[in-house]
Amino acid sequence: MLDVHDRKIVAALERDARVSFGELAEEVGLSKTPCWKRVKALEDAGVIRGYSTRIDPAAIGFGIEAFIQVSIDFEVSDAFEAAVKKHPLIRRCYATTGEADYLLQIVTVDMRALDRMLRVELSRLPGVRRTVTSMAMREIKGDISFADAASHALRG
Image 1: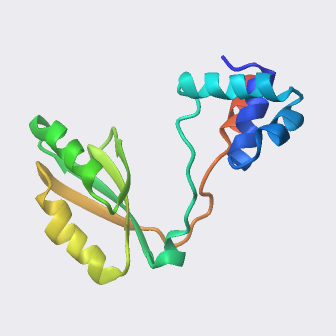
Image 2 (image 1 turned 90 degrees about the horizontal axis):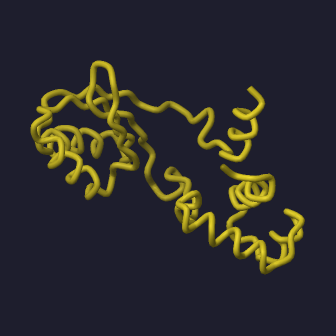
């Protein structure tokens, strides 16, 4: 369970992971060394899984974003999941309940590339039986603050 300082650290790093330890320590009300130790402990515990840069897919040419429900022959699920992890256009993959076994989030440059992805690449992944594709028209909400979500959850 995160304490008040840990939640403040997580919230600050979610806003700007490039903040210096001096600025971070000041923002959360700690000195630099205890702040650094807490960040290290959060990393070691797997709370902080890494740091990355958020890229706008459309700004670098990926104009199509789609969500694909995939039904597979479940005896090859390990092979399917391994192939999904290697595919560069699949942003996210979730095992799901309901009509489909997985939900994929993918990006492509255009409709022709999406067609190729669906017919040539995705259909040939291990065990794929059926796909249902939904196109993203526009993003309404792209991310959440887990620090804010935790604070909200603790209130209820």
